[in-house]
Image (tube, rainbow, N blue to C red):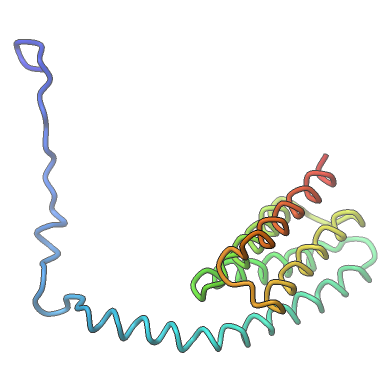
Length: 162
């Protein structure tokens, strides 16, 4: 406020503006953006191969988790890491629902040590949901089916979490 008790606008300096120029060497051009988008499009086909590998790993670790006696926190951690990868990649390649389900599974697992039988069931349902999304090529958010699937996962977690 100034002497007359009226507000005064203070504009902070913007040093980033002086460091990043518009145009010139190193500038992002529309052509560069098109090339980058083409690379991402080409990688989308590879994504399906990558995610199938991740789903196979999840299935293997889930089998180990079910067979484990006593402390199974190592298997839980392994599932978390794979689900985290799935979460990180899905949206980049047009499978936002994979990102959402992977994130939901990660949130469920993040504070878990060992999993009890009910929690193992929740993990299995999430892995089945991820497999379903890829098997049906449910791109984007999956529409109404994707919404129903995600809401079902939320209900399963709520039931087990109490």
